Length: 204
Image (cartoon, rainbow, N blue to C red):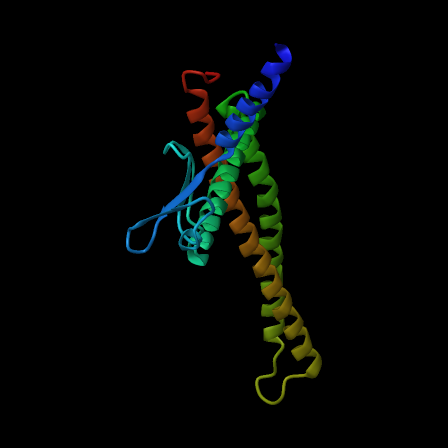
């Protein structure tokens, strides 16, 4: 009896497997007419299509291939999403560092004052050097003869002072910008720190 049932069981299994593997590919052509086949019809190659069972149940839907323009737009959007995610992650990291670095707003102010003072010291030294060079140039200007050619060594000394003045003034401008940047950075940190620490889950 068991032997008699085995071929029937195998037949049913193979029939079920064949039915499970059987599928139809359908899409709509350019005119909107439905096209189906046991293999993907040629008219469906560049279109979205569905894989369905012979009874009509949808197994899966496949999107149409992207055009080069669509592919470029999708890649651009993916890059933009990744960049946004990276910026958000970096912002969260900076927030954690900010909150972990200071116990109070006063600590931010004290650090700002220390860093500004360091740069301000360099600025004052550069300004003092500028004043000294201006005084030296004024002395040399008085040595110019009232008429006739200016002595060559005097011209060279004036040129040297002029070059050093230009370099010193560049340093002064750079240090002034550094101080502005420092103040702006610490002001932004101060504002953000207050925002973070006054939230319901903040430390204050």
